Image (tube, rainbow, N blue to C red):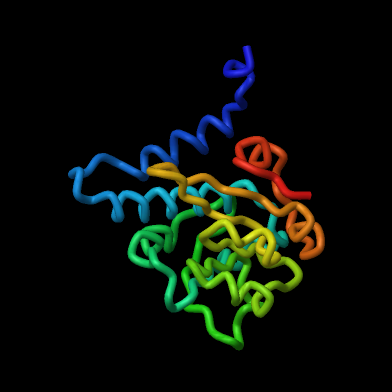
Length: 172
């Protein structure tokens, strides 16, 4: 019964992540993990309400040392709702102009980029305690995401309840 109740948008999220993962040789696990992270990030973006400036691109800022920029490059120009995604390199001066910041493993940089209206995504179990909004956590071959609702609320980031239901963990 619970599976039948899975909303079409949630199903789309899961199918989209699986489709972007694709099939590859057994030795390509790191590439597959990068593709899956990119798919998860894209689908997370689709379930977050950003400021309604529909004429401006949705800026996804990437830390210079982010582990998956090649896979994320495929998101450049993709549409998330009414807006096209624009990839931007993150530096000390432009965090405030970003809608989404992906830090990779740079959890220590979370306090530097947290600002009103900015969705902060990073890799690892330490993301939520450091104040990040979304943490991508790998367990074995699975990549799941965790959500820090308190950080989202404080930063005025509105996350869909549909996304929260799919999270591995939701921290209040």
